Length: 297
Image 1 (cartoon, rainbow, N blue to C red):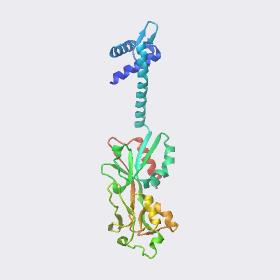
Image 2 (image 1 turned 60 degrees about the vertical axis):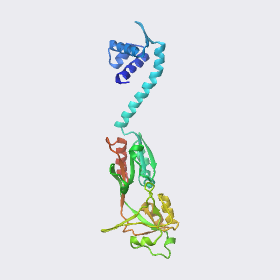
Image 3 (image 1 turned 60 degrees about the horizontal axis):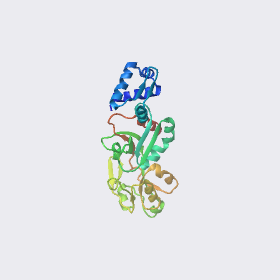
Image 4 (image 1 turned 90 degrees about the vertical axis):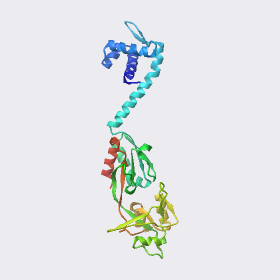
């Protein structure tokens, strides 16, 4: 079916609704003779007469009525599809699908979600939280959010949260009778909770820097996980040191449930929104990025 076929069917439906070639032709900016010709061609194509014509009236034949019942809903669905796709490309509307690590929910999504949805009532948000780095293009996501050390080169990356603090913490119970590390290498003599990547199954090597010195330490301990809540709970339960977001650990540090170490060695990092850009950024994504960057600190 091509564009002319669709226009012929649209004319057929309009003539049936108006019961008049003249009214239908005027509505579509056509002459009566052109409208009559189109309907004759359509009747020739389908192999049957669709309208009974007299000098005073136009009515559907039985075949025409059956054809209208099948065609009219299809045309309505097509018109709706064209309307929706046009709106999605020209307006700030639609469903924004994001893939984010669970730790980014509290850092990026939760702080702005209510205000963003209030500011853009025609945008819906679909957020999937997982630590694995997925192919957002093949999975149908508009964008992903990840830390700067796991971004792929074929994506456009935009910083959302910069200068993010991490910390090394352990419980007072674990530290009882043990010296607090003064240098990252001293962690090799301590129990630590490892972060294991769900993608590569590799253990994250803890990163440190101070001045010109940069160190990556492969720590050891009884627990390995890719769940940030379990990393926190392991430290609280006395299973040694955990490498955590400072925002997550701060309430427990202030309450004395955790003790931080090596603060001047722990580097800052950032959270980036990344997306695949084959043909430009959708307006709904641009709206989210601008809003997030304006409201996140």
